[in-house]
Image (cartoon, rainbow, N blue to C red; front, side, top):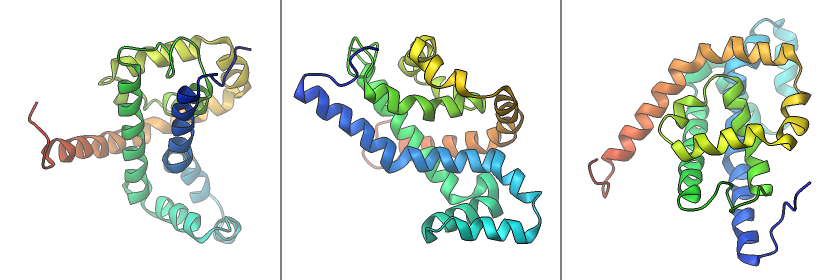
Length: 200
């Protein structure tokens, strides 16, 4: 296993910024996208009393509100919109971080910055949604090709997922693809039209 925490203090601070981004936005984002794609379908097939018990068992009122919104509105939930925006910010940051450097986030070797991001990008890939972003971010696309070929990615993530789980993601991800693409297009259009943004 390579050294995953760089010795350089400046690189360590950059690594912590990536960890914070995952904690502050992407973790909830991947949850909402996954819920709208797969778990919503499971809950719709549950008896009402079991479904309500699931909501009560969430515990945190804010998380309960998010799950109820995504259950009721699916990909049209504002929390899914927030998730798309979180991924857009992350991929923009990743593209910029890899510009003139790489091939990993902090340079020549993978670090915890890469590892923290990999499972959240993998879920988009397994749902068949990742190319909605990587089509416009070539360095992100190259980073992901490298990540999926890394032996520790396979042994620590992809090899641990059962085939029926892959099948479920491949089945349900395409059902929300158009909705995710629409959110992303709106987000990019609004960003391009924001004050201070120059026309392409």
